[in-house]
Length: 318
Image (cartoon, rainbow, N blue to C red; front, side):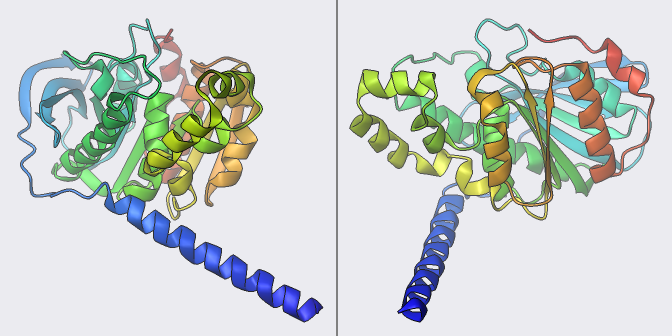
């Protein structure tokens, strides 16, 4: 009887693993696109600042329109690592756009990094937010965000001054959530820094955290579950377990509500190699987190060593 029970358990485990792998493969294919589609990169301005050039550019979105961005490049010619940045979406913040990481990218240029900082879909001219919890526009914007970020990798990888084997991604909050999806979709990225975001949308939604309990009571569990099932392919949980061989560094504030309380859970979902650090701060994180990001990326992308004091003058976002 024990042997039968063990065999049945093993069969179930193998079947579940196969199902999960098939589901992951199906979800990844949703983000397929024609990589030969022209990027149509356009430059509108350039600023030289202390050995660094900051280009104001845009490139074509696969979903129509253009993606405004900053391209930060070391002035001296060379073959550099590259980092794609995904900003947060904090309502009312003047940094909920491509400016969030600009100061940090300028410092990183001194360490030998080419940075691309695109405006997310929600930060672009003409985007109108929808507060309806069941709005189709919210997942549609997030889906476009993933495709636009993948095209950002295309842009970086095509540059002669970029070593395509040393590309990283840094995302904060909304940008981190998108980065969670990219871990399993975009295999050209060697290292990920994911800051202050959840990585398991469905598990969070059906947790006992007060904010999610309130949502389920307001809209009804059945309707909420139906929504989560419909858009399961946008949930980072299906991708972060497939991040390997890319390294993932999670950064969370200790005073960031349910994200703080569930940080260890998020870490458990991610494939090795991975690490987590919590900081004595809230959702915006702090200078210590910036210095730690650099050290992680320096090791993973083989960046030039610079004085950590360079990061002390970076603007604090709010």
